Length: 235
Length: 163
Image (cartoon, rainbow over all chains, first blue to last red; front, side, top):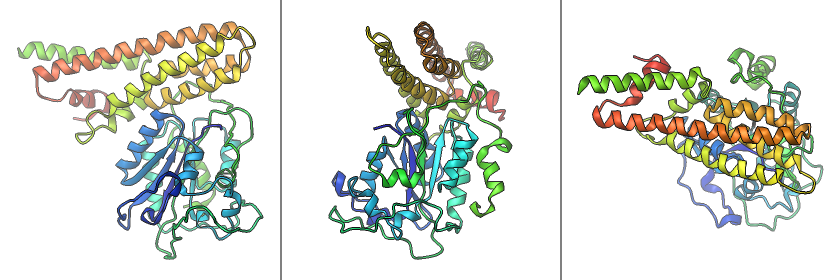
């Protein structure tokens, strides 16, 4: 399948039973610590984002593909669309996209499809710190229908039990999913949750309009900041 | 002895500056360096090592993809270029990244000759950068050996403007 990248932040990893990869025991997190699942097909980028996240006091799990991300989250690929229903705790997982492609229409589409934020690669420490601050605040999704999910209702879950408990406390920040783009060139982008719920590959456009050899845009020009200014509910 | 150290330190400083001035490195390399600390003293070296491993692998993939006697799968070449563009961008390898941008366009245009030429340039460029960075590390090791003050202090002073 096409490779991609992302970061998912899971609030209570000690409750996760990842049957697919033999289970994973984690020590309980401090109340302020967040667990981030980073997905990127590039090893260099995985190491890099891992370092950025560790510096900002996140617990990090880095995987190299969407399949492994689903595996880590304990989502059975076959039943993915059925498991992720309206009440799924995965709806709580904020998604942040990382991409090297500075294409406003794509960025807007990601945000419209439910991504919480968008980081332009190469990612800087300041970007991750900003996200971290964002996560620490009392953030709730402003629109419960913002994410598209399959219409099917949940069926009986016969895969190993996923005991990730949704956080019932209002003061706990939702987890975070940060997804990097893929190297596949074929299809239009899927929404982050669509891609999570779908057993299909994770194709994203491979167009590269970044003809400039300059490094990443100044903060004022950042599409994320521009988007945040337009949408105060994201703050 | 001090004057030798001072001289080496000056050469080291100039060397780093020249890598930036000549466009081998951009400010993402500075960012990379800033992530290193006493707790992770080998971070930059580790990332660069992975990057150069990546270069070997991806250039190999591209060479094989372009070497097909039948129809060349340009999307396959392009996928590898995209990967290399990403990792070179993340470590601040400015020239390699720039070449990858051109390379992508050549793949999209299915320009076989252009792709072959560009791949050769990429090959030369990453190897050149590797040699230069290796020189930089070697000199830094010598300086550290001669003078316990961390060479990264010099780096910080020059590049990050810290005193």
